[in-house]
Amino acid sequence: MKSIFAVKIPFAHSLALASLQVMICSTVYSAELPSFADLVEKNGPTIVEISTSRQVEPRAPINDQELNDLLRRLNPGQEPDLEPENIPEMRQRGAVGSGFIISDDGYVITNNHVVEAADKIQVHLNDRRVFDAEVIGLDEPSDIALLKIPAENLPYVSFGDSDEVRVGDWVLAIGSPFGLEFSAAAGIVSAQGRSVPGRSSYNYMSFIQTDVAINQGNSGGPLFNLEGDVVGINSQIISSTGGSNGISFSIPSNVAGNVVAQLRESGRVERGLLGVRMREVDYALAAIFEMERPRGAFVDEVQPNSPASKADIRNEDIILRFNDHEIEFYTDLPFYVGQYKPGTQAEVILFRNGDLLTQIVELGSSPTNTVASVGTQPSQNRLNPLGFEVTDLSSETKQVAGITGVRITEMNEGPGRSAGLLKGDVIVALNRQNISSTEEFEGIASKLPSSGFVPIRILREGQGTTMALELSP
Image (tube, rainbow, N blue to C red; front, side, top):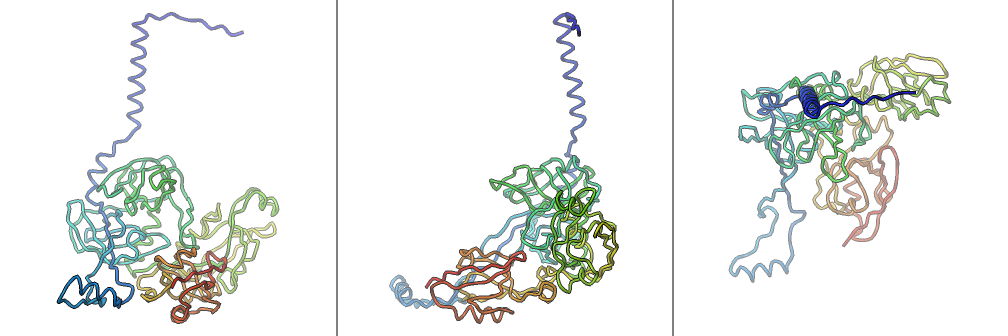
């Protein structure tokens, strides 16, 4: 039997004791919270705001007799001239995002989605100077863009080692949320190695997740560690409202450094390709294949004539290691494969029939290498009644995936958007006619009926489906 003895303490003494406890707790608590003031003061001048715009052209010549007559009545003695070349240029304001300077001679990093489709990009410096930027290279899979401004002797930041970042570490973001220039927000690293569904069916990204308040306009800005090194580039959020819900994702600096080096050298990024369709190894698969625990990437299908097929990787193999990188989750595999260039020989350790096997594979070229490169020109037919632009598939896509068609590069208002088409979809047939090039697509599109429904066959993330386009007169 426990006995509890109560000791009576005078009120004044108890009040003093309570005050002492509060002081001790406050001192310990404040000692654990860092101040970011010095970090912001030092690195603030390296942060930039990005603004974009694009020229909007008339869709077609205006030859409306009634409109001409109306203009003549409104402007007596003046002959109307509605030809497109005589209509003033119209510009549409695009995205506003953030970025940061990485060299004293004016190289700037931001997100690809901030500047894509823009024909004018302006970089606003902390000292209020504004420069027109040149695009050095874009990389859609990593969502990174490298820009160059005509300035020298600029302050700049350096990349840190994102592999050293631990869950629970303090991090700081500086950017322009909602256009509020050079705003700072702090938080902690919530998780590492996050895979977030994106626009590409080739998922080459493994994000740093944080609870930093990232909002519209923060995209492309840096994520700092306490030493003031950039360990990430703020890229995405998950939100039910469009604002910060405390779940944000940053591109690891080690990935960004590799991408930026390639963009600076050649204006494009080349990634290797293994050529397998994968899924997670869950508890059931681990039990079926007598594994000690679920791990690795389960090979659902090896693509014909792919590097994996040539290396004798088979369906139902479980890939456990790629070039000394442990594959814990299946999303780890494309991330590590994407860090190597085509032609690289890699060692793959896999689990098959209870045995560990080692295979040597020579990586192929990812279809994203051509699709994401600068200079890929979409079909720009202003009379296209479908409301989207397309480009040819790369030779690697045709060879490795065994498909022909054209890829949607830009969606505008029109029947395509109404039908549910998305940027990145591959069109393999239009109005029951197979398509192998942009020329064929334009030829078929130009002969479509003026109204009614026509079928369009697409591939999206490897799955084929047929949709109905409703054409309006």
